[in-house]
Amino acid sequence: MLTVYGSVQVLEQEKLFEMLLQRLKSCLESQEQPLIGLSGGSTPKAFYQWAIQQATLRPELAQKGYWGVSDERRVPLDSEESNLGNAKRLFLEPLAVPSSLHLPFEADLEPPVATSHFIKAWQERFPAKDGFDLCFLGMGEDAHIASLFPGSPLLQEDEGTKALGAQASFASIEVPGKGWRFSLTPLGLRACKEIIVIVCGASKAKALQSVFTEPYLPNHRPAQILRACAPFTTWLLDAAAASELQL
Ligand code: 6PG
Image 1: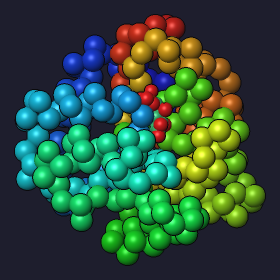
Image 2 (image 1 turned 180 degrees about the vertical axis):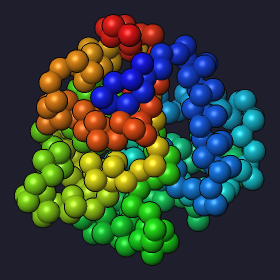
Image 3 (image 1 turned 90 degrees about the vertical axis):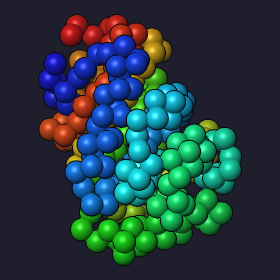
């Protein structure tokens, strides 16, 4: 099914993970030094454990890529809250991907400083790329993606967001009740080559229905910002998450 937000597939979880792994492998095989953006939250952890158990992703293939995250919390890598930290522990270390290929934010610095360091290092290492070659995203029950939450200034993309550095692919933002976050901006999402949004569970069904059927209001339904990325965005849903959609 094609929507204005990308192509949609509804799969049971094992098939969904197989599809994810396949897309990851083809990205790693088809490019010299692909930039992979992993997502955060709980869904990816299940995928990492499944993928390592499958043992079909060769470490030497994983070691071709650079590995970052669509968004990060301002916590040390050894925190259970760290998106890259979880990817490291559950996925990158079992694949012996050296930390020189990980793209962390320096959470100990002031967030705007950490963001400018991240962007500077990115531009020095990957001058021809403003986004990930393959970016995984999850979606929250409030239709947020990455750390673009409803009402986020980063969603406004007007003159005001220049001060937030949102004209770059990444920005840091203080999220009410969640603390500081680092996140891909809408500009950064548009600069990606391929985006895969993985949404599982009945708790996401209402938000998904509103994203796909309600008027375009990304300030209320941030996942709708992916309208501009539709040609290279795939939504992988399980049946529970898709239960409110007339597919
Ligand atoms: C984060 C994520 C966030 C996540 C969604 C879905 O740092 O929390 O990047 O955007 O992808 O909240 O999370 P679940 O997979 O846990 O539902």
